[in-house]
Image 1 (cartoon, rainbow, N blue to C red):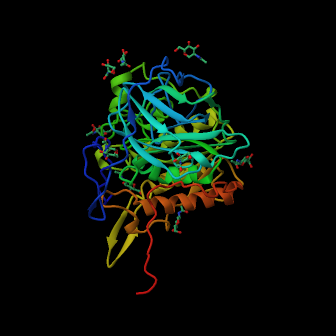
Image 2 (cartoon, rainbow, N blue to C red; image 1 turned 90 degrees about the vertical axis):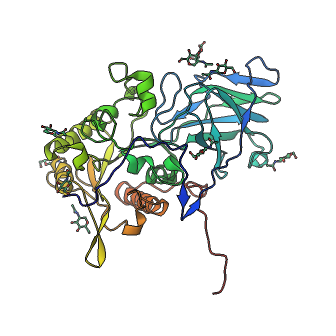
Image 3 (tube, rainbow, N blue to C red; image 1 turned 30 degrees about the horizontal axis):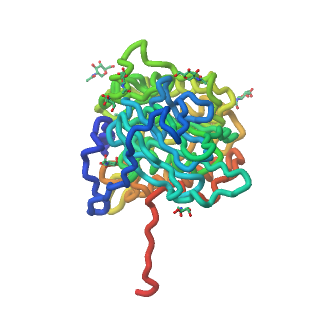
Length: 419
Ligand SMILES: *[C@@H]1O[C@H](CO)[C@@H](O)[C@H](O)[C@H]1NC(C)=O
Ligand SMILES: *[C@@H]1O[C@H](CO)[C@@H](O)[C@H](O)[C@H]1NC(C)=O
Ligand SMILES: *[C@@H]1O[C@H](CO)[C@@H](O)[C@H](O)[C@H]1NC(C)=O
Ligand SMILES: *[C@@H]1O[C@H](CO)[C@@H](O)[C@H](O)[C@H]1NC(C)=O
Ligand SMILES: *[C@@H]1O[C@H](CO)[C@@H](O)[C@H](O)[C@H]1NC(C)=O
Ligand SMILES: *[C@@H]1O[C@H](CO)[C@@H](O)[C@H](O)[C@H]1NC(C)=O
Ligand SMILES: *[C@@H]1O[C@H](CO)[C@@H](O)[C@H](O)[C@H]1NC(C)=O
Ligand SMILES: *[C@@H]1O[C@H](CO)[C@@H](O)[C@H](O)[C@H]1NC(C)=O
Ligand SMILES: *[C@@H]1O[C@H](CO)[C@@H](O)[C@H](O)[C@H]1NC(C)=O
């Protein structure tokens, strides 16, 4: 029995919601960066098409340069006085973007369909701090709302000899496959507050993709409004959102992700099944087991060298007597799936096959889960930290992010020296 009754809904509208943070209304009054339309012919501006080789897209984007899944991004170098981006009409209204120059703290702004936004001017934090030796600064932008996306129509640069510069990919690549828990649902800044982000951005020098969507099951079945499970959807470019349905429908037009055209993930992390493990979705234990084996085989077929980490489901906490205990979903099944790839071992420390078990028991405590059944920002950070250490100990990866902000809006401190 699952006493916790999770409802990991997919269809909650985020724009109109008032978000309470410790009982206070959270301010979401971000600086407005919208400007008048910039045309490629406007003097003083150089415009780049979305297919320009100077632009690097992070996560999954389609051939119309529409972003999908959680925390997709755009990155490029520039030598210019100003940088503006025009967004196409497939951009969600009011979608919240995080952006920054180089290793400055993240800045936030809402953008909207069919608009142009001025992201960088000489007044932007960090603009004057570039080392004079090469003069190239890096611009990075991330979509924070898992339900929403942008369509990049044009990138504009202004100033004498303004130009964009291609920034090479980092050498390491990771993938995280999941549901709302991994997409960052109900976290302060959604995608960029998730443990997935904290883990993969936090490791540093990692290109990554968060193929996670709220409410989705592993088994290919309708769950909380998602028409497909991850055994189907992970092979596709778009997620299971209604905006994907509007553009691609539910049929043969859903485009496949071109695995050959993108670097293979060195490490793939999977945290899926909390929605399968709910009576609302009617997935049997056998279906879940077989789908898990299928997903692992599908990943391995495309990325034969990828090390796969299977995260056990914590499922929340329940009160037992006068204390709390962690739950768990499909505990025996997940264990047996992992053992089946490792001659009976859970392979938690490496040395066996390519599938590894990550035991979440003991990482979160009951108050690391918010009232809406998802980790709090602190819960996300705890998970990310433990996974980072696991990856360091198991695969010898070095923690290479050594200073720039990863999680935004988490700085609170005590300023009283005595009580
Ligand atoms: C980019 O797209 C334009 C048309 O929109 C096309 O003319 C151009 O050749 C494309 N460039 C590259 C690098 O594919
Ligand atoms: C908006 O998208 C439609 C496709 O639905 C396209 O035909 C139209 O040209 C686009 N309009 C603008 C202004 O981008
Ligand atoms: C900006 O984004 C936040 C977070 O999604 C949202 O709460 C807010 O309503 C948005 N504001 C505007 C003006 O769209
Ligand atoms: C986009 O903006 C153009 C020019 O302002 C306008 O003609 C067009 O109708 C707009 N399209 C949408 C979908 O809002
Ligand atoms: C950078 O320098 C210019 C010129 O002195 C100044 O106008 C601008 O405010 C500076 N930007 C920042 C972020 O301090
Ligand atoms: C969830 O998983 C537990 C095992 O951890 C099992 O006992 C329970 O029947 C499962 N519930 C559903 C609805 O799949
Ligand atoms: C649940 O699954 C069983 C077996 O697959 C099926 O017979 C039944 O109709 C399903 N019930 C619902 C409510 O979908
Ligand atoms: C399982 O055991 C067989 C026989 O000893 C060995 O060849 C194989 O490499 C092992 N597989 C894994 C994943 O450890
Ligand atoms: C996970 O960790 C808990 C706590 O240490 C332990 O009781 C449990 O047996 C572990 N699960 C597996 C599958 O090893």
